[in-house]
Length: 97
Image (cartoon, rainbow, N blue to C red; front, side):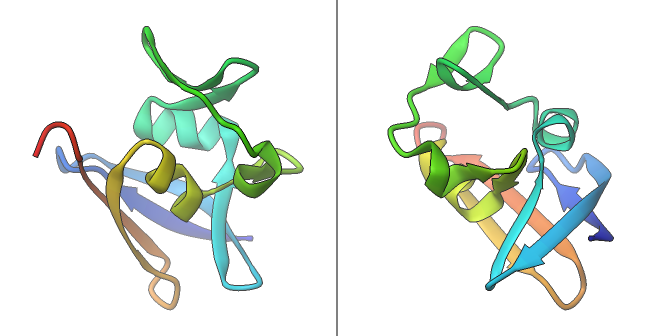
């Protein structure tokens, strides 16, 4: 794991421990919540009162690590990952655009 950054659409920058394995970049569930407000719960990915069902939990999360590309796909949010620079940028959700 290496220290990286998640940048949200509102410009909030969060320092997180990024894990890269087999081309996938992931963070812990607790750091995902700190950086984005979303967390993985038994009912799905949740932020405040909104929950998105997760049909394939193993595609999203393994050993408390959440795959950021799969997370972005499920919550319909644009994402750009620069693994070399250790930066993840999240854009607006599809329903907002």
